[in-house]
Length: 186
Image (cartoon, rainbow, N blue to C red):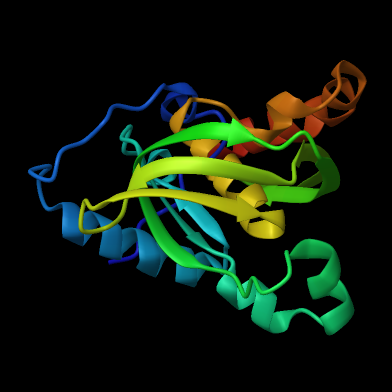
């Protein structure tokens, strides 16, 4: 089932999400719905708050992006021997960030038609449970790490626009207000 994407202005996007157990109602259906919704939206990541669920769950697909990139782009956006991932992250906690940072354009399915340059660490180490609730502890780099950080922040009630400078936030304020007003009319 494809769910509508929660749009900027909805309070669920600013909630700190709750941990979940394997007994969470219909959790495998929720995960499958998120994958279907992500594919339909042609995105690379989706967090549960984006389908109006305040739980610590997000999915990442950097594999498709890798497949569409040129060899030159791959060298810039991906670490060596990284071909991207398709992974489910439950109850995730980022335990380490690299000192090395990089800046790249980001967008968000919940903030349509807005793309901004965001600086983030090049790599992260993250502890999480996969779709089978098996404990994982992995380090990811480049574009994959960027998506993970973006989606993880959704589960913390944060959005990528929170990382922008005060001046940049002021410059996009009218666009954000139009998104909120458009959301209210629906």
